[in-house]
Structures are given as C-alpha cells and as structure tokens.
Length: 173
Image: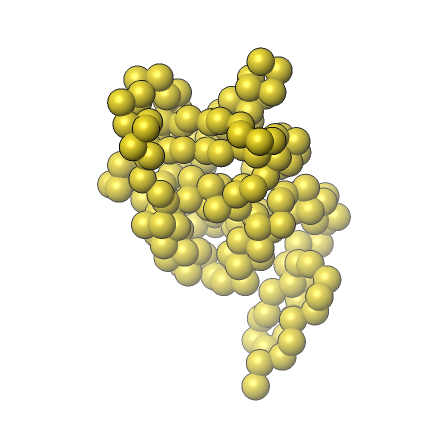
C-alpha cells in the first residue's frame, strides 16, 4: 500500500520512505518562484528516476502544439535560439496580460521540443511578471541535468533566457 506523500514540498520516495529531495531552501524558493502549473510538472519529474524523466520529456515533446496557422508564414520573423543544437524558433506575444509562447521545433529534436512543451504547459496563463520571476535553471529543478548531456543543457538554459528577453521586450515596448 502506497503511503501518502507529505504535503510540504519537495519529497521523493525511496524504498517506501518519503525523504526530502532537495535540502536547500534556495532550491525550494526557486520552485516556489514558478507558476503553480510549472511547480506541478517539477514535482512530477522529481518523483521519478532519471530514465523515467527522459520518457516524460518525450511525452511533452509529442504534446507540444504545432505552430499556429497564422504564424506559419511569419517564421522568418521568429527568433532563432542559436545555442540549441537543433533549429529552434520562438515567438512570444502578450495578450490581455498573459504571456503566450509558440515554438517551431522539429520532431527530430525531442529533448528541446520536450523542454519547450514543459514550459508551454507550465507557463499557460502566466503573467509577464510570473515568467520573469521564474528561475533560469528550471531544467535543474526538473532533474534533467541527471539525464541529458551538458551541451544540450546549455540550449535549454538559453531557451528560458530568450523567452524572458522577448517578454521583457514586449512589456517595455
């Protein structure tokens, strides 16, 4: 019979025992700086081993929405994230005080596509201030540093930077 996880974040079960996953309050503060939807995804990733995190990443890659029809002709106007090994394009808009992110990433790039899928889902409904308050190293909170190469991590880190820069640009006009 499965025990009930303590309500206090963040815990992980090891051999049937619930243990504190991250002991530093700094990491806990980083998680709490994320919108609630992203916090839930982080918790989901932290509850599984690194191999399962890769499977989750693939699921998010498959769930990443296609580029909307209205943006297909404007791909040249999208910003390329040059630090990514694969061609990654980002378009950000703020509508009614909510940030929306759109990505054009080939299906042959499941790592960055999955991470983008996590960010799109985790930031759904987020305000620009919430996006800007999010830590730059969300991939660390997800435990992806234990599952993918440092070269790919650099691209993931850059992706959040591009997203924040585009939000900042639109807010300051």
